Image (cartoon, rainbow over all chains, first blue to last red):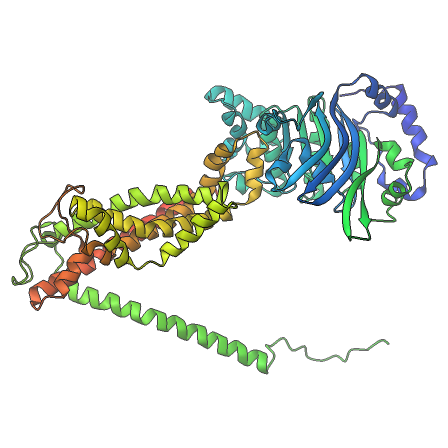
Length: 309
Length: 297
C-alpha cells in the first residue's frame, strides 16, 4: 500500500475547488483512508511498474457481431483499474477476454493482441485453464457453489491438487480473513454457502478466488447486487488486497470507480446507423482523478457529469 | 384540476362481475379435476388392498415355490417373484442409470449442440415412445434366441425402457444448473471434466437421483418386456444371469388369467406387494433427494 507523500497532498488540494461544481459531489478525494495512488505516482508507475496486461487494438466478436472494437490500454501491477461506461459498451466483454472466459461462449472471437506479462493470451499453445488459474474472476451475481462454506473456499486449491487437510485449513482461514468474512462464518464453515446473505456470499466468492492465490483478480460489477454497507465492505477489501493483487473492476457506479480505482477506462457505444448495430469502444483511459476532473474527450465529460448514459 | 375526494367508505371487497365469476369457475374446475384424478387412484388402491391384504403374510412374502394354480390361497408363497423383481430391476438400474446419466451429461455439457448430440437426443425421445412389448420382442430376438431365458434378458429389456427416461430427466436437471456455477468453477482454473464432476453433477444430483428412481419404480411394474425374456417360472432363481426367472408383474399377469380363486387371490397379493415395493422406492427417492440437496437451501 502506498503511503500518501507530498505529491498526494498537493494533488488533493489542487483537485478540490477548480473543477466543475456538478462533478464535485461524486469525488471523495479527501477521504482519509484513500489508498489510491497520486497522479505523480501513477506517472512514475507507467515507467517503472510491471505491465500486467498490454491490450492492443482488440476487437471481440460474437459470431459476426462485433461487440467491442479498438481497445488499447495497459494495466499496471498492484493497481486497481476500473472500466466504466453505459450498458452495452463492451466493458464486461473486454474483462472476460482477459482470462479467456469468453472462450466458453459459442462463437466468441478475439482479434488483436492481449498480452499478459508479455505473453500473448490468445496464442494457440496457451491453455485457458492455466490462464484462469493465474487470473481469477468475481462475477456480478454472487455464485457460491451448493457446497459448504469450507468446501467453497477449498474448491480452487483442491482442483489444483492440494489435498492436505492442514494446509487446506490454513488456506481457507487465510482467504476468508482476507475477504473479511472469517469472523462471521468461522463457527459455521460446514454450513451451506447458499445460506449467506448477498454481501457475505460475494465475499465468499472473493475468498474462493483469493484461495488459489491468483496474480490478477477481475471483478465484474461485484457490488451491483449489494446494499451500500456490503458495497463498502467489498471496496475496503479491494483497497486492502491490492498490495498483493492487480485488480480490474467493471462498474456501473462512477462513485465506486472514484473511490477505489487508480486508473479508469471509459467505454462508449458506437451506433452504426446503416446496420443499426451497436459496438462498444474505448474512449478514454487515464488516471481516475484526471478522467473525472479533466476528461480530454467530450463524451467522457458528458458521461461523468451525468449529462448522458 | 384538483379533485377533492368525498369522504366515503373505501370498498376493499373483491369486485363483483365477470372477474369474480371467472375466478369462481376456475376454482371449481380445478377442484373437480383434482377429485376426478384422485377417484381412480383411490379405487385402485382400495381394490388392491381389499383383495390382497388378506393374502399377505410373512410366509406369503418369503415362502416358495409359487404353488400350482389349482391350490387355494394361503398355500406356498411369492418369494420367487419378489426376489426376481428385486434382482431384475436392480440389474436393469445398474445398466441403464449410469448410461443414462452419462448420456445426459454428454448431451448437455459436451456434444449437445452438434449434429451427433441432436441425433442422440432425438433418438432417445423416439425411444420413449416405443411400446414396452416391442422392447421385450427386441431383446427376445437379439438375446433370448441365442442365450436363452434369464433375468439378465429381462433386465436388458427393462433397461432399454428406462434409458430414455433417465436421459430425459437427467438432461432436464443438468439444464437447470445455472451457468454462473460453471463459470465460477472455470474461473478458478478448472477443466471441463472437473467442472462437470465437482460442480454440475453435485448441483443436479438430487433431481437426477429422484428421476432415476422414478424410472426404476416405473420399470419395476412393467410386465410386457418380461413376458418373452424371463419365462415366469414358479421357483426362485437367485442367479440373475442364467436360467429362467420370474417377477411380480408377470406373475400377476399369469395368475390373473387363471379361473382358480386361489391363483387370483395370490395375484392380488402380488399386486399389493408390488405397489408396496414401488412405494418404498418413491420414499427412498424423496430421502435421497433431500440428503443430496442439503447444501442447496
